[in-house]
Amino acid sequence: MIQDFIANIYELWGGAYFEGFSDDMYDINAYLPIFLWMIISIVIVSVSYYYIVNHPRLNRWYWWGAFNLATSLLNFAIGWGISHGKLFDLYYEQNLDLPYYGMTEFFPFACICFCWTFVLFFVFSMIIKWGSKNCKHSPFL
Amino acid sequence: MSKVYVFGIGGTGSRVLRSLTMLLASGVDCGNDSIVPIIIDPDASGGDLTRTVSLMRCYSDIRSKLTFDGTSQNEFFKTEINQVVSGFQLPLDNKVQTLKFQDYMGVSSMTPNNQCLMSMLFSDKNLNAEMNVGFKGNPNIGSVVLNQFSQSREFIEFANNFQQGDRIFIISSIFGGTGASGFPLLLKTLRANRTIPNFALINDAVIGGITVLPYFNVKQDNKSEIDSTTFISKTKSALSYYDKNISGNNSIDALYYIADDINNAYDNHEGGAKQKNAAHLVELISALAVVDFVNNVNGRLNPTIHKEFGIKNLPAGINDIILSDFAKSTENIMRDALMRMFFFTKYNKNCLEKQYEHQPWAIDRKLDKSFFNGNFYKNIEMFQNDFFAWLGELSSNNRKLTMFELGDNCDLFDSVKDYKPKKKILEKKNYVLIDSVLSKQEQEGTSKEQSYMNLFYSAMKEIVSQKF
Image (cartoon, rainbow over all chains, first blue to last red; front, side, top):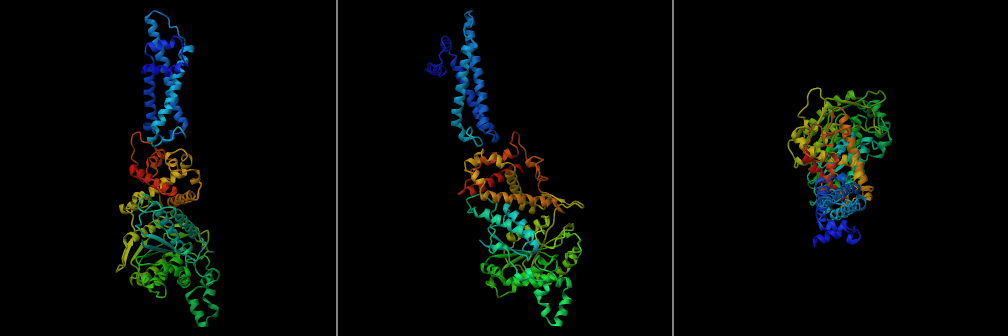
């Protein structure tokens, strides 16, 4: 159930379904760790931004954007790295070459990870920002 | 709430009132009393007078937008400066402004015998003196001319306003013309004049005064009638007069003396707009005498108490005083208050413009461009510019009082001389810390002005107690 939901997220409810690649990702349950890494990194970075760093000079939209961008790029790398690693292992065990290529499958998938991170970072920011003393109006400054 | 009428006589009176205004703005405690400054100075265009009057007006304008009903923490501008007489001044008769002293006295219409008496009492220079810029260091002229202030509409207004429990304090210098002559005259009027309204209350009021002994010289100028070589002899004769006629007859309850043996030589201006001396340590200490009187002298005293001021650390040959050189009791009165106002001023000067649109403390209270372009903030800015100038003058005069490093060459919290700020690991620094503490405050107010002052006072209070 959860696996289906997470798969739908990364496949954009069929809008970003890659023949073979998406099925393999689903079968080896590779979406879940990518999703968990995304959630954990968003929580860590946004909580740090709003409550630990909580800096009066970092409350402008571009600083918030920089934290978000960094998290999104991290998840771009995580998405690419985990999917590539898990699929490589899958085909390696079967003595087969990996049939997916960087620009056709991994790059678009990593971009989706990037975009979801960016969106969820924004959503999570909207939820937690109110308790911050110095950055409560970020990113609308 | 009772009132303390503070008469500032002559240029020194105005300058001490300036220092007092700075202390009150910083939040130095004056109980629940309001201060009613009244300046007596024939030199209506005198630089010292006009500067002080505009400063006190600015203070009153700022304070009129604030309330102090016990719900707010703010102590900036807490003490009311009340304008009972228009322009804070007791104006002298127009004749004083336009006539020579001999015409004012009507010497030409006197009998020959009286004319001879006049020439014994007054030199030719005295008799030909114009009085529009004061009495130019001649108390013998002042003691005659100033006598007419008690008939002025403004003095009657003061007397009409006087109520049970109100007190009076008189600031004067002893070595000039206006202050030296005005002090005994005013005191005599207050104690013995039975023709003024409320005379019973006024005659029996608690009265204190500070007489400022020589603390500066003026440069020798043959064209000027002011000669500082006469300051000491004038002081001696005035002191001996006060001994019999002020302290000796208990007409005053508390008499404060202040003096310094280091004298700075100012430019010799007889009066007018150019007579605008830089702020001096002695004037600040004189202002503290007013604070001491307000807080500690509440009833008639017999005999008169006399108070002098001493500094705890005063190494020989050192002309530079810092806050920690004062005795603990003096330091406690003004240290935290001045620090709070100093950091408040520094933040407004160096940081506010760049930050207010981005910081939650301003956004949440809707302290926006219209607020910071409005009259209230303009008055704060004007006041704080003068506060900064005042600190600068104190630190460049002789003797120097250097409480703060006014430049921007060091960390903000290192700018309090001789006080090492406490530092914590990972603590925010300088203005960033101020913004951070401001955004932490929860104090609100019934108006934007009130919110702004509550906010800054509570933040500065937290910062000063956290760092020092």
